[in-house]
Amino acid sequence: MRNKMYGLLLMLPALLLSTNIFAQDNVATESFMRSNGKIYVVVAICVTILIGLFLYVASVDRKIRKIEKENGQ
Image 1: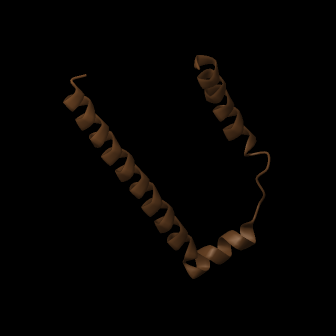
Image 2: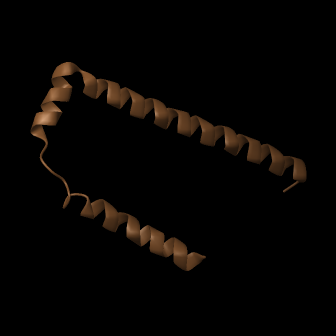
């Protein structure tokens, strides 16, 4: 179990560093989305999804704490 965790932790930086290799310059698409204001819609949707995920994780954490207290651990 511990070896898998170490492997995943070592793989994450490698994946993050390799993303720059595959990056392409899409200046036309980028300027098109900014000119129409659609980039802000995409950012708003991403932020909304992330906030929802954080709230879900917080609620699950509270439920787990409550169950642990009931069991006396």
